[in-house]
Length: 187
Image (cartoon, rainbow, N blue to C red; front, top):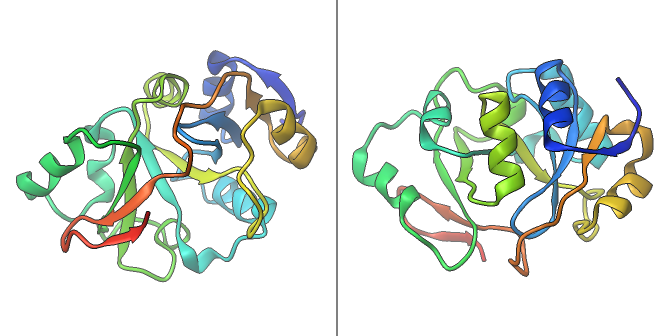
């Protein structure tokens, strides 16, 4: 399953369902993604990025229902906040359910989630019928990659497929907000 090629959302959905790792466009840059329940795929992403497991990973979805199994809370006001329109992409740090794998939540008891409206990313979640790991496509400490060709060059055959579509108009990766306290953790 290792043949870093540019491909479509449909091809990426098949790879995700088979346990692979794909790169795909998000609101501001390319992301690396997989099924968050697939430990081997999550480990591959961490190794590709040279990222420490303890930082945790963001999950994205096209709708809140796919994220609920990962959240401890069912507080409607907190969930409503996640649906409110924002000036750019926002990831929310929420208490994690006890079933969230440690590789996803890192050294925390919380998890970062985002409802994406960027068409290619939303189509991936919809087509695969799952939330996806979403971490910027870059080596840890380096600038996130913003083109499919650049992702293919940097990651080579360590990624199974790069979705050949454009990123959104956001200038930077998502703002991260603590959903309980409202504190901005990254702007």
